Image (cartoon, rainbow, N blue to C red; front, side, top):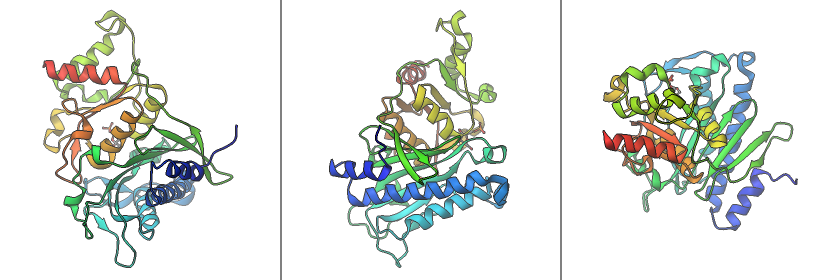
Length: 333
Ligand code: P6P
């Protein structure tokens, strides 16, 4: 089969009117940054990039050296192109307007530069997650308030997985497209056209050590999966938990499943574990574009009206029929 590169795919998407030149440039630039991050991640101990950076991020979590490296790569890759008005990162408290040294464009880019980085030192897959919003009309000096747009306002979303192969998954809303990095050529090849999530599944992903903190609807739902064929579901289920959202979501996008990081009593004051703007929202856009569903348990993730850049939400996403069952159990409670 003739190999289609990311560049050719993006040019065809632009020709179809699915993206403009600036969004295409954004995708090319992010893909190039992902390649640079992949090079650093794959060196591991050989490049002295493992371990702590000696600083904490806005979440109060100890930053890994690779968190900081990935963050710097994404910022430096995107600041000169003239396609962005500002950026926001999990690793940085404040939003970062494009400096006056460079032209500003119409997009806002948000990212988690290296999600799952607690897995880095044990050589388990990690990834980068990104979300693209439009800068509000007429705003030339965006503030945090200009980022406070619901997930439905996203114009694009994507993630990369630094695993046995490096893959880049993206959507502009017209389906989900997957690319695999050809390291010899240094180009992303279009290997997974129109990825879709089966509506049913037998695989669930949750950190079961939190069971005693879950709300009743989640305890009911997981209890039924664990009861298997002896319980109301009358069939057995399997469990996976990588503790890298990107890796768990990628498995679900590839073969189905449900991923849950639900609200639990020990993190109620924080609002949940995962971040809305650059984890839950981009993944929800991708999952919905692949025929899946994404909910907080009580509302569609993409409908949540953000109030803070780094706010957190409960996440239930994946195979549509399973997510809808979890939502039903919340409504019945
Ligand atoms: P736990 C990684 O730190 C992360 O943000 C997600 O990628 C992942 O799904 C979750 O946290 C893992 O959380 O509590 O199982 O370590």
